[in-house]
Image 1 (tube, rainbow, N blue to C red):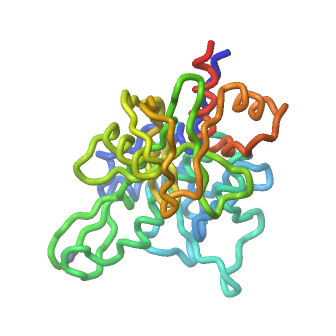
Image 2: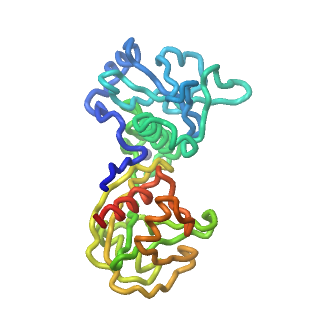
Image 3: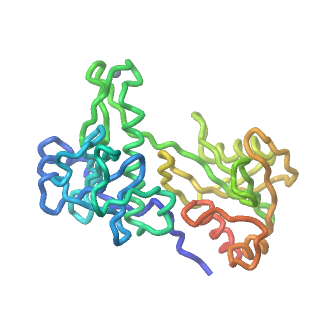
Length: 300
Ligand SMILES: [Zn+2]
């Protein structure tokens, strides 16, 4: 059976309105009667009692304690302007009735796909603003522009854009087996796909080859793209790949991972079918889960 691969944090509104972000247009959007805003604090979105993202009209944020950069314009959601506010919530300014700020990972399995994508995009942008309030070139304070999709340094005029960091995450196949690893701090029995940041000067395929070799001593070939996932912790693009192992012998680099193991398809399928507890699979909202489902589907 072939599944749909539901990629968590993907599927948000596609119109980011990149060319409609001048000050006058943004003011019009903020006042638009159909505009909505989501709220976030410390990377946690406000959830309404019905389980969806809590939404207000931007005008309802008047008088509230808002962090830099003020309203972030996420784009158009079904032609309606959509904003996000990073609000300060503490004893002096507590959450209002109906707003329940919840950990994004904790609600990843409950929020609708679209809401999860919206919250993830907002979180990545707020995290970027928080760590880029000073110019990386001259050290002076930067200011947000265009509804929060860039910052400019008033001193040296350098423009700064939100970063997305590519990470390769890969299944290493050998015949009917797949190589999975585990980190030292992971829950007991948990295994997942090997992964690592792409380094300057290499392709995705080369990053796969280097990371697999560094972590396990396995040489690979035929690295290929399968699927990708935005990962808002804080702002990665997880590039899901597959590749073929040329040798099976493992030389584990314990500075990188605790261990790695070969699993045959039958074992992985049994764990997914819940007829075996041989190991703990990655959560559904992680791309590694979807990559493994994809691998199981390759067997016809
Ligand atoms: Zn500067």
